[in-house]
Length: 241
Image (cartoon, rainbow, N blue to C red; front, side, top):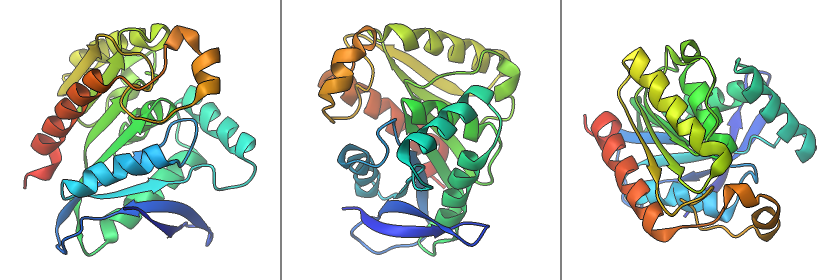
């Protein structure tokens, strides 16, 4: 179960976050930063963190909307994604990584990042900045830069997209092409029978009505297949010493 914490920032302020740790004490664990979808911190994102904790990871979910009015924070995140250049949001994710790596129960050289929807695209952008100790990125139905060169420094990538997610499934092909061109290890799959947000079990009726071309919603069979691939990839890249 996640608990609340505050992550120190370079300017002396702090960033809200949720953290999940394994029930059994230990040290030298792998760590992962969970970047949320457009809804920000939520029970479904905390369930993602709990999934990792159950597998022996320490997971932190930074609140990237913690700097003021939510609409303004969301606009800042989206603008930084479009530019594809590091900014305040990237700095917040880096602060979460630094905090995670410094924990006595975490091996700072065995880290990963995972993101969903907006967070999927941002996880990819962040991973391409070459953070210390980051061994893998899990990119789920996230936007992908048009130019492969933007991903030249990215770590190995595992990614999941839904075949019914009309606006985003083309990003899967783009990501596959970029990573193949760059010679970066990857596992990118478009899952049949799934739309946007298919890997988590949240229910957002408003978005489900207005985002029809994305066909959003949990798809249990595809979700379990995607999670199995994700954990297998992360085990190879991060979990094992």
